[in-house]
Image: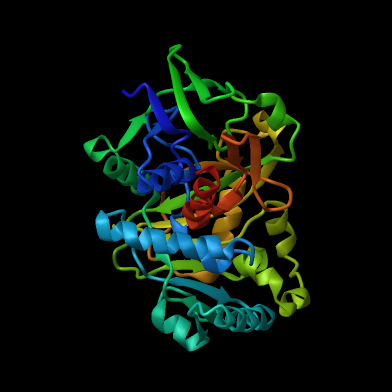
Length: 382
């Protein structure tokens, strides 16, 4: 344990850990403090899809840079990265028109994509029902990771040879700029000092700066996901997103054809619960299915029930069965994920001084863009 650090980071999710990574790349001494025994919030509860293609024009450069960082890290240590691409499947001609314009948009950004016919979708993704696809847009250079492994492997690699001072099971109860440095006080009463500090505590709004968070426009989203039993006979490679995802993701809202989308009668219930359908097959053949979104303000997070709403799972399964045929529909696991987001879809960045910053509210962009925005923040801090 060092008496003083160049950087202290609160929160070892994907955002906090990549702040630590970028500071270490600059030769800085870093302490990373995690409340739980290991990260167990949004960073490990998601699909593991790294999809810069779904990001707005503001966030796309961060996602593209994050993909470069992931690729470099995978050459150093196995983070479970698989470059198996992302496929957005259109279910009608209106959605296909959006994909065609989006294809042109990304061509202008020199970001590879391919338009697929319905026949090509069925060729590449045999489980997709023949009456669902009109076509698809494929991004061959995008990735998937195993979220329940990736962050733990990255932390272990960063902690080798004591490069990173990683302290799990350490709640930080106070952070303050003393005028010459940042002082952090842990749950045990230990004091840590650093030249700079980042608070990346996700949707934890009750321990540090509760009044600030409760007065902000931050809200928390609760998501529901499911997992099938291993189905090795099924081949669904890559990040698979569907018509409801095309209607939800920010990148598609930036093309003119998006304004021509018309809602179908069944969309009302899906929109009410923020449902869009994604698939991600894990190496053992099991498939992650989801997801839904419920919201509460930062001041009323307890209003989000901790249970899994089976009505929402059944509603999702109804649409999923319309999209794919699976030989076995047994669901072996279901869970909730929670993340914070801002009302405008940007992020919450609050500088308490030139050496102390809070960064959260990135929404569902953490896995795709976290490495990129963390790099920006370290450049600002140092």
